[in-house]
Every structure is written in C-alpha cells, then in structure tokens.
Image 1: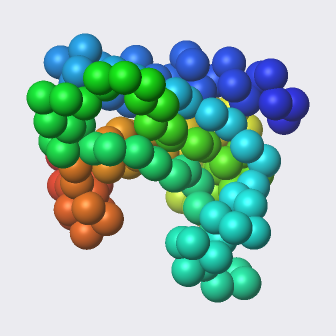
Image 2 (image 1 turned 180 degrees about the vertical axis):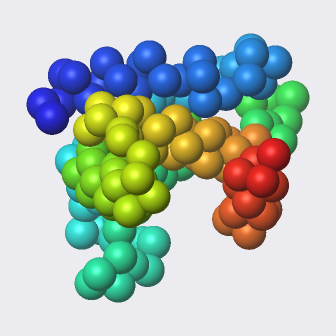
Length: 143
C-alpha cells in the first residue's frame, strides 16, 4: 500500500477509533506516519531484534498538563503510526480470519489494525500506562 493511501486510512479511521467525547479533548497532538521505528526509537523502547511497534505516543499526557501547559512555544505531542508493522499485523489478522473461515480484505484488515493502534496511542495520551492500556483493550474485546 502506498503512503498516501495509508495516510488517508489513518485520517478516515480516527473518528471511529476514538469516541467523540474524548476526541474533543485531544489538543496539540500531531499524527504522523513512518515506515518503521528508527534505530534510535528501537533502542529507546528497548526492542529486541524480532520486536517492533505499531505506534508510539510522545508528549505530555493530557492528565499531566497543568495550568501553564501551552504557555509559550509548546511543540505538539506526536502519535506515530508505523506503516510496515501495521501492514504485517493486518496480514497476520487476515490469516487468523482465513483459518476461522472468515473473509477480510487487505484494506479492511489494515483499517482494523489502524483503528486499534490509534485507540492504544490515544489512551497513552490520556495518561494510561502500558499495563492499563492492555487491560482496557482486553475489556473492549470481550464487550
């Protein structure tokens, strides 16, 4: 999938990934798309040779922003989605659906992984740590 198509999917899936009441609270956050996590990011995140990231939140969580947040030149937080790992994860999702005898197009699989990744990274923006995010993801899957 080319980068323009992927970026379009990210923009289209954002509203479906985040409930409106939370979307209204997301301020000063830039969404970025990169092919892969850089070597520096891989080191910072402590990734092993066979590990990767689908997304990454960097910034000051909404819950930690005080009264003086944004006074002066405040750079935006960033949520980066990594296209190649997301496409790989989508491919794995498709294979699991094929084994369950369910058809899912390439684009549907990418859209689903993008939605889940956006939700995950926005949860970090709202102050959830990795354990809390994963716990809530399990709850969402069982709903």
